[in-house]
Image (cartoon, rainbow, N blue to C red):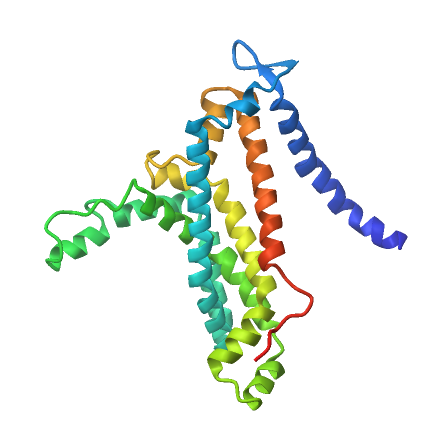
Length: 281
């Protein structure tokens, strides 16, 4: 028992120093006053927490939640079939497909975002092909809108959905599918009542990873949205680096963390892993 605690000690210290302590600092800053030249005054105030709920910031928060939810749903709709396809492939091809999934991590995220600008801009690859095929007469506005931000989010976070779902599918007991087939279930019925419920932990893990990552994202909105689709991450970045209003930026961060934790809790209660996996045929 003592050996187990000693082994867990480095991880606990890491969480304490690099997670709990920064969150505590952000919590304290949210209730302090802003100094005259951008510093903080150690005087308690609720001004910044109440300011978060002004219509302007509530609108940005709602837009952030909407895009994060759409990103999660699209990643699930694209990532689950792809992960399922990987498990059906030969072992050698599985390794190649998993390599392709993880390949984007080898390139800087900012570089990959700018690559999309080359593809989607007015004189980019997509518009050039469409113009040459005569499908359009003028270039389409594919950048600097909500659709471009959503595309960038899905592209960046799709591996975080595929890998947990693949791990869950790979651990699936194939004998249960054989039993379902022996009982007269069609392939769709076996998938719906056996495979899908048993892979719910992978779906939950992938959805949480994608949602939490997308809700604080600001690089995609800056690069592919052209700052025309402000997300809460952009507002927080601006408060810390531009406006130098650290207490208000901390209040926004605190509210975002609390809302994220509440949504994650609700998600796990509704769609998280259950003790008894599959359903009835």
